[in-house]
Amino acid sequence: MLVYSSSEKSLTVIQIRAPVRRGAGQIFTHSLMEFIRNCNFKSIILLTGADSSRRIDSEIRSIPIRYLEIGGENPHTLTIQKLGIPSMNQLEIGRPGIPGGGTSAWICNEAISEKMGILILVWFTIEGGKKYVK
Image (cartoon, rainbow, N blue to C red; front, side, top):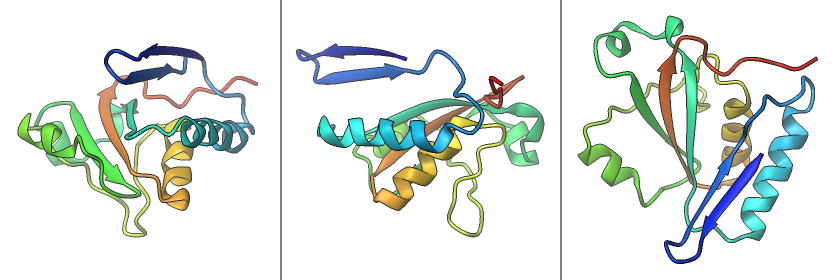
């Protein structure tokens, strides 16, 4: 994992460069969210890939990017909407459905339980993010 920060732009980017080991997703996610809370970030935007083979018809017929807003409001949602990025459908139980989202699903669930507002940008890709290290 790499962390880039610019105090001049009030921006921190956390890049997860490798898959999380199988069985360690919950621990990793909890630690990541604790780091985010301790740093007092004003907003969180998660960029993730999703398995394009599991898109629904309306997603196949349009651009390959969607957004989800969970756990509370995010100040960047209006900007995303102005760019014309469509919202992604969510499961009936209120949990986000990111097909092949891997670690992103853990992060979403943690954000929901912690009531942390998070904006998720989902890019549909060929492989998605569901790869595990044994």
